[in-house]
Amino acid sequence: MEILRQGLKVMDLTAVSLCKDNNLPMIIFNMNQPGNIRRVVLGEKVGSLVTA
Image (cartoon, rainbow, N blue to C red; front, top):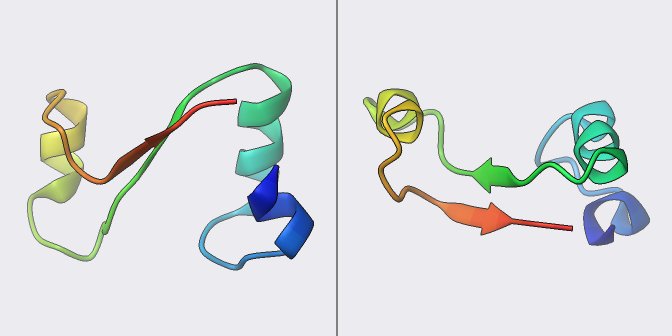
């Protein structure tokens, strides 16, 4: 909710709203760091887990 309230431009606000409305957790990570997307998909602990 804080992302929406403050209008932070760290990610797509539609995606944030959809996750919030459907009680889906989000993993916030640096996708510009090589290998991070793969690590997240494989379930490694990368970044921060945000839940509603």
